[in-house]
Image 1 (tube, rainbow, N blue to C red):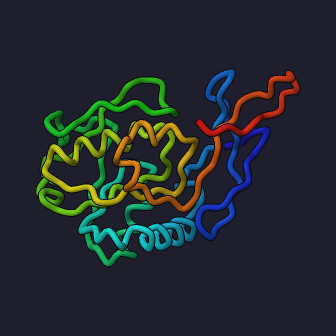
Image 2 (cartoon, rainbow, N blue to C red):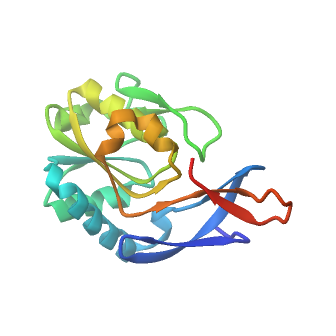
Length: 204
């Protein structure tokens, strides 16, 4: 996507230039879309994230469609795992509502539901799970994933992400914030008080 301004940062060992996208008059985010950064980016990021998560000894990776899918594949490969589970925000006929949790996201306008395919529940039951997503901002999607997984009898042991954004996710996740392993962090942005149109970084 095009943007007037960008934010330079690093995701693990990789430098990225992210568009600054206003969500409202007083909040702007640096938008990281994993699927827009190519195959080699996902491969390197997945390997580096796997290195951070490996000490927790996960037995399977679970991620959220669609942005987390490349990361789930590459992290699973790097961990030597041959299976992963994807949670869905888009209703599909085979998903149903039995295994679902409400979720809101900073980048979507309406509340959604996070769903797991009932046929995939046995893949996580009683297993040590790594929850992987491209970015944690409010923590809402991660929290919904944790609730859903625990309902199945899975044990989330680590939460892997490319980046955390701001600090609000820590409050949202509570004690589970200690499970987060990230390749980087970045601030949120708001307009400067002097009316110059400049953006000021803040951590909340």
